[in-house]
Image (tube, rainbow, N blue to C red; front, side, top):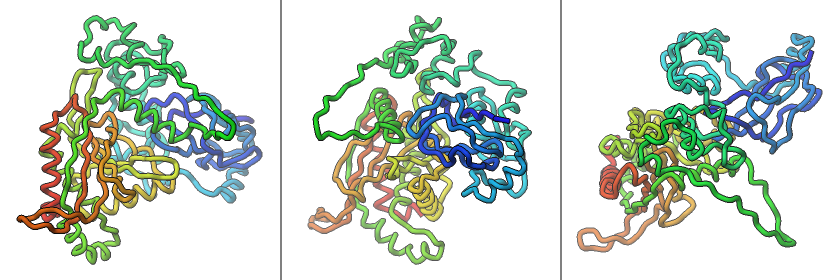
Amino acid sequence: MNYEFKLPDIGEGLVEGEIVKWFVKVGDAVAEHQPLAAVLTDKAEVEIPSPKAGKIVKLHGKPGEKIKVHAPLVSIDIAGGAAVQAKAEKTSRAIVQERPAAARPPQTANEVLATPMVRQMAKDKKIDIGQVQGSGPQGRVLASDLSSVKAGGSAFDNSGANATSAVKALASALGVNLSRIAGSGPGGRISETDVRAVAPSARTASPALTSASTSSYALVSVARQTGDTTVPFTGIRRKIAEKMQQSRRTVAHVTHMDECDMTAVLALREKLKPQAAKKGVKLTFLPFIIRALVKALSEFPMFNSSLDEAAGEIVVKSRKNIGVAVAAPQGLVVPNIKSAQDKDLWALAAEVAALAGKVRANTIDVPSLQDGTFTITNIGPIGGLFATPIVNHPEAAILGLMKLAQRPVVREGKIVARDMMNLALSFDHRLVDGADAASFLNTIIKHLENPQTLL
């Protein structure tokens, strides 16, 4: 008996996924939960596990091809499932899911057992997933469990539409059913302009929001000559390009720069190295930066905010989830440290190292890439004096760390050598002003030049 497994929605309203690689081939026996393929989302590569044991009959796509959500991904012959399961478990290289030793009632939404698809469905319906009683294994919350919970939000289900999260939110606010719109963007993507054109409330929409409409653009073709080579514009690189392009079109970018004397930080770090070794962590200067940053964000909360264009409101985040950009072979990836304000130097050092390791090993999970509130990009180890980082939209700002090196500076009328580092703060001028940016960066510098305040 053939079972046709369809690509699930694996996060944030995904409408299609790009097959990165297959872990199986036709004729292979697979166990339940065994990884079938790596699929690229807007956030990261995600391993898709098999829902059933059986034998692979057909793969519906090749690496590099895109498959729509709910379209066939793989066909599995599930006849003699128990026997095939036993065989597959002997040959399987890994099981994608770690099963908890014992089920326990979740205390928070982050502790709930649920797939990214179910989490997104709960988010779209404004359901607190932490309050949902799961009917799956070990209390896992299933899509069917959400159907019995009273949902809020729009009368239309726009979650599967070919549009960004911001456009979906705008459509819900204006009462527009996206399934009835033919998008004017690339690949039929629905733009803010498309939504406003059919919105019943378009005439009463805020002028400030109306002026932010997305403009269309023509795709560019490039002439080629003998000897030129091509590289497929796919995968993480394409997703980075889309994200950066969206940010540049949306955010009113301004970059404020200053320099920081890191001599005291490096001295304190040397002093703490033996203690770090006992704790089994590598203490770089990055945890000091994060500690200084979260202190500054407490004084200047607007730098930890996002603009909800659909609602016409600025959302000031209570959590400080600090993203750290990590360069990896597949491209730049930004995992974030959840609730960084609650963690000391040692916890921050350990988490920075763990997240960077997962990114470079291409094992980072989607929740680690979601819900960031502020980003740090560390350009310094490569080199460079100044840069203008692009804000990680919808965040309000990003802090760029430049090269750390000894430079001659004047102290008490004398020229001395100090360990100096330039800082570049790019921010959304729609949310904060230049004077605020200068004060915010001054506060970060104050704490770094007096690092005892960070312990």
